[in-house]
Amino acid sequence: MSFDFSNDPEPESLFPSCAVCTSPFDLHLVEIKNGDYFASILCPNCRREKHFEIDSSIPLPLVTRGIFNRFLTIKGIEKKDSSVLGYQELLNAEFQTKWDAMAKRTKRKSIRQENLFDLKEDKQNSLM
Image 1: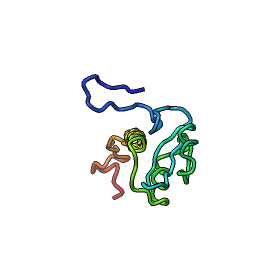
Image 2: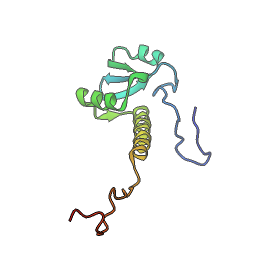
Image 3: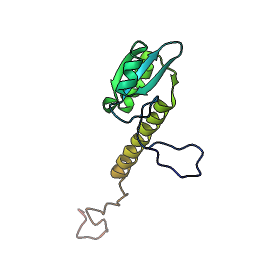
Image 4: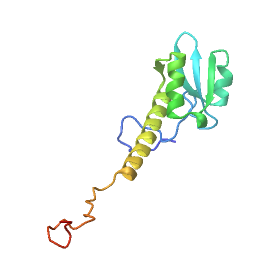
């Protein structure tokens, strides 16, 4: 499921996939606790094979940008594999798109309000 130009040295995946087998089905953001302590994205088969090494597992459809950042902070995870880095870029791009759309909606043109009263100094409009 790579979509890229043929001459690009690093193809980028449009969709998240398992870090081990590249399956796009039933993915979870997991905390791997073995010799290396890191975050990864794994499918059910790969999670089953590594179930002794996994401490936390969150279904990927439930992972928002806020949950992702909180997960990394609470667990103290600094190292992320390439699947997690790619997913983080997707979350950031989605956030930026939503932010730009909101900024565009709330951006208002400066409209000059016309005067309610004619401020000409003539005798009819003055109180004196």
